Amino acid sequence: MPMTDQEITDKIAAYLRSNYGETLVRCEFLEDQLNDEGDGRLVTECTVRVGASNSDWRKTFTFRAGDIVNMTWQRLG
Image (cartoon, rainbow, N blue to C red; front, side, top):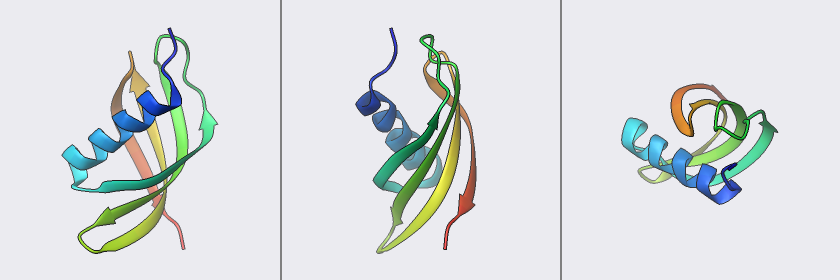
């Protein structure tokens, strides 16, 4: 069964928090290439907070079986 947008957002938030110490402020899905098994890529535009400062990013997450296994990023602005 496919993941809901909220489930995906929760996974992204947990991944960013545990791996980068970032707090997810906003996340917009630009390209959703995930299949029903939770495999594929998801391109997002995100705002994250570290300490007191926010920054905007384009982050591409690679999922395998519903878990994030890789992320690439490009800072916006």
